[in-house]
Length: 251
Image (cartoon, rainbow, N blue to C red; front, side, top):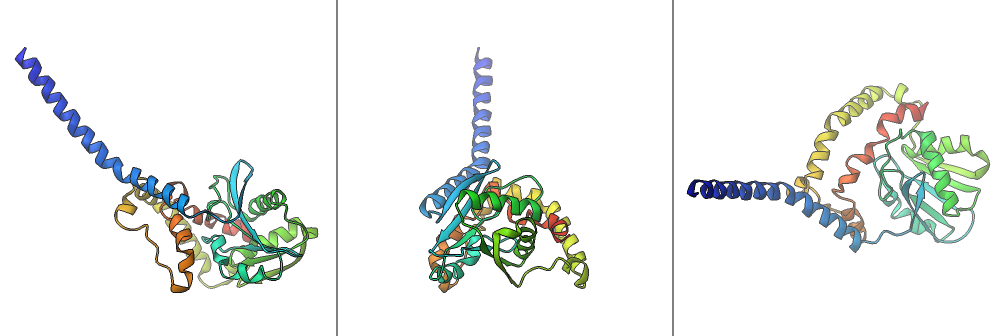
């Protein structure tokens, strides 16, 4: 009887140790999820959300007038790229910035992120947001490829385009060393994606202080929005999801 009681106490002891280990292991992940939710709740996102092909997309329209100007951000950026441009343009006409899938506040997607797919999603988003056509379409960096594709797919919906330091469809082949660099970046993303996911899903990135952002004095009013975008487990490296399809988009 004493032996059985001893074994039971021993089992409870190790069960407690195991429970403590599980708590220590998962506590950072739970803290990170709680902080992500808190930051989002305390930093409301301007604009509106619509469901496009089963995923949430974010668009922010300000100002009034015609034609509307639609702003297309660079790769790995978000609607926040236009944080200083949009207010100024809004003094003149209606202006809309938005987030592509996996960027800013638009949900991630699994399907290829090539130019044709991206502009079809944008087209549906503009329909739902009641953005009148024709509009002026502005693209920066990789966004320039999507502007070109939209002009090809929906030529009658554009009043004009503006390419701001836009990517060229030929750069992957003609700029010295660019293709090699792109291939290396694509390979590196595949190698490190699981590590990045592990760090953020486990909460260790936040524990190590990697979820804090530093902004310039000019951007202090936007600090909350940037902070709310940090260390979101469902968005790990999603802002690089278009990288593998850059060649396809260029073609």
